[in-house]
Image (cartoon, rainbow, N blue to C red; front, side):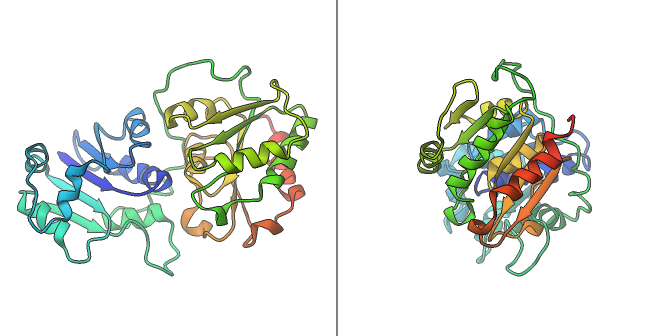
Length: 308
C-alpha cells in the first residue's frame, strides 16, 4: 500500500501529524508512507519509523500540484502513478490539487485544511484523524514516541539538566525573556543545570535571556543554538524536564516523553496542547502577567521533587 502524505507548515504542524500516521500504519498491511513536509522535521519522521520516505515540501516539483497545467516532472509523475492513497492537509479551495492527483492516476485522494476551522475547539490531532475517519488518535498517543537516535554523550550528566526554550514561532506567544532568566537563576540556586535551546528565529530572545543573567557558569548552563532537530532530540532525551512556550520544540519534548511544562498565552491549549505521557499546561492570556513564582512552583511540585 503506497501512501503519500502532504503536510506543509511549521515544525509543530508537521510533528502533530506523527500520531495520526502512527495509527494510520495499523490500518494497512505493509504500508509504505512518503511524507512531504517541513524539511527540518523529516529526519525525525524517518528516525521514528512512522514513514519510509520523505520529501521537502519546499522542492519546486510540489508546486506543480497547484498548477492548472498539471504535473509534468517525470519523477513526480512516477511517484504519483504508484500511489494508492494521497492525503493532503492543505488549502485547495478551487480543487486544483485534488484534480491533479486524480489525473495522475491516484484513485483515493483526501484533501482537507491542515487545521480545524476557526472557532472549532478540537485538538488538531483529533481533527486530522477525523479527516481520515480515524477515532481516538490522541488517546492512543500517550506513550512517548520512539526514535532511533545516536547514543552520543551530549550532556555531561544524565537526567539532571532542565531544558528551556524561550522562543516560539511568534513573539506574542512568548513569556518575557527576563522571566525565563529569573527561572534559570532560581534553578541554579537549587544546583539544577540548564540547557538553553534556541532556533534560527530565537537569536534576539536568546541574547535577551543571557543579558538578564547575573552570571553564567559553564557547568550550570549549556546553550544549544540552531542545531538540527535530531541533535535537539538527542539532548532533550537526556534532560530531566522541559519548560517552554507554545512551539514546535515543545511538541517534540512532549512526544519524546520528556516531562513538559508548556506556557500558553493567546493560542488555545485545547487545540494545540502538546501530547505526551507527562505534560502540565500553564495558561495565561496575557503572558506578561504570568508570575515567575507560578512557573517555579509548577516545576518544583510536578518535577523537581519527584524521582522521574
